[in-house]
Length: 320
Image (cartoon, rainbow, N blue to C red; front, side, top):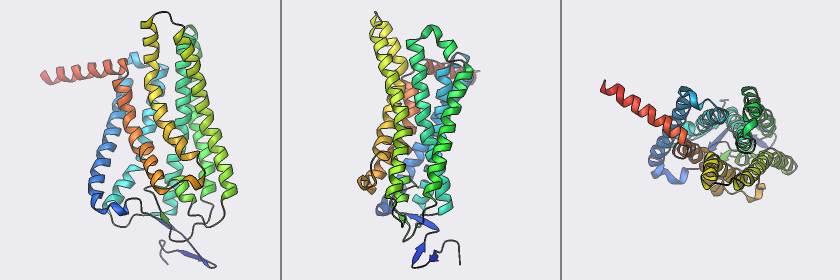
């Protein structure tokens, strides 16, 4: 028996592979979609690598805010890579198959990175809170050791929580056709394929999602409430504008990320449809990682200045 054939268990056929059917109805458009997603993927990788390189090579940007931005850019590159390359391959082939083991590996990676980003965005909000509300104690409260601990805590939380959740999901028996109404192994489309009642487990999974997605979100909201109060107390309009500009990029990124995350993972199973799942998934796996480098480049004065210096240096080198 080949590994792609189902294993018989009683009257049920257990799946050893899944088939993605997300783009099956768009056969004629798949070459166009391949080009579009490939362009976005290359842009995302290049943009985030540029941000990391600019920060790494500019001593004036070696501050806590940009330390977290490097972490975020690295995370975004890993996140989009966990989904898009496989999707590109499947846009070129007729049979879009993935083994259960490969599906589990993909879910481990993207879910760990997703929760890590939730925590990392909260750490970035805390950094802005300290910088604006306690500027005199900023160097003490946001020293290198504190930044490393916050980043390590973000990654550790993502690994521990999502490893446990994904492990539970793949202890379920999957049977039937194994057809996933999606373009990657997202949590809810895979859970729908389980041939046992998962209602009680879904309640637990929902509670975990609320706890570990909403807690960072609430920390971000609390930080920005305090930041807003502090900014409004600044007497000069110039001072208020400067203080707010240091937060605006982060606010946009948080809005994009949580807008899709909340609509995806905090809905009950019955509220999910293949169309809404695919639309929101494209937002948080493809569009959001591509927009983040644009947001931080165009709206961040220090990053723009570093990019301009790099451009001038490159032009000078070519003239020589």
